[in-house]
Image 1 (cartoon, helix red, strand yellow):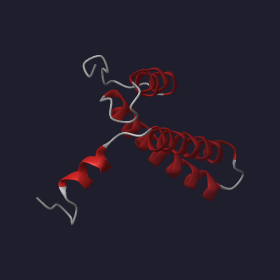
Image 2: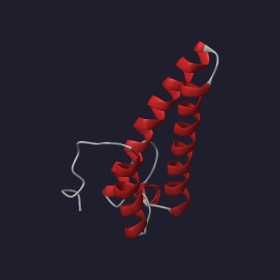
Image 3: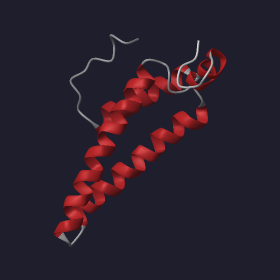
Image 4: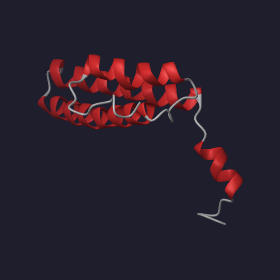
Length: 104
């Protein structure tokens, strides 16, 4: 079966979790959120304040997506690392109403 020009083996290889990609996505979103938050709060220019708010908002959604994948054990191959990224780190930085215990 072909999907978007990829065969079954290529699709299975693409969906495998990886330390490099999982941690990379997490660190990229943390850096983007931190930079956006810094611009939103400390910039002296109103345009940069607004731009920083937008960047922080998009990075927040990225962090929630990364945490969601980690809670489903699909971000990295390591279960404990997924738990740390998905629950402990997310709840230390954001207040969420979604219960992660139901995903475990």
